[in-house]
Amino acid sequence: MPRYALKIEYDGRPFSGWQRQKDQPSVQGAVEAALGKLEADVPSIAAAGRTDAGVHALGQVATCDLQKDWTPFRLTEALNYHLKPDRVAIVACALVDDGFHARFSAIERQYLFRLISRRAPLVHDRGNAWRVVQALDADAMQAGADRLIGRHDFTTFRSTMCQADSPVKTLDELRVETLPYPGGTEYRFHVRARSFLHNQVRSFVGTLERVGAGSWSPDDVTAALEARDRAACGPVCPPDGLYLARVGYPVDPFSNT
Image (cartoon, rainbow, N blue to C red; front, side, top):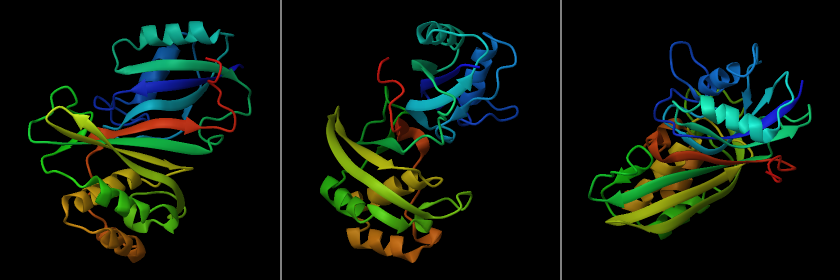
């Protein structure tokens, strides 16, 4: 059975998350339904990460095994045709060897979080970014972010529902970028690691927003990290601005697409 890697873009708002759920719309369910229009009995697809309800993706990766030999172009076109009713698109497709797995072959994951500061409500980016009304100090947020980079016990910044075996992770990048935005300012948080705990990025951003607003100091971020206690975390921000931006592999399967 030929194996294909799919790079998937989606708007998370209509879905209960990536993972297929009974009686709830999911991204996995939408892609598998489209595959089912092409072949019968397509095995379940595997993804690089399970995004939560309302979380978006620019570069989710999934692998699927099919009976027929499809050219990547034809498979992409066919899937996008059947995905038309959904806010999901296949942006790249590649034929990969049997040893490639979207999740287990990944060596890093990159997330983007969009935070917009302005008084006026969001119109075009409503549901696609988190809006706050107060001005934020980007330098203070970066100083707080720097306290989190490296290998740490991130118990404070993971959900109590997290199923990871260990709270110890290595955070490779947490960078705050500032961009002009009509009537305000956009702050983009670029977060990179091999893997993440449940709600880790949203916990980071919610905490750093408090630093930017002046309610917390960078030292408070260090104290929260060292507490190893979920109760010490700042507010967990909404999923609206979170995107799975990219999944890294030893060899990029989409380099020739």
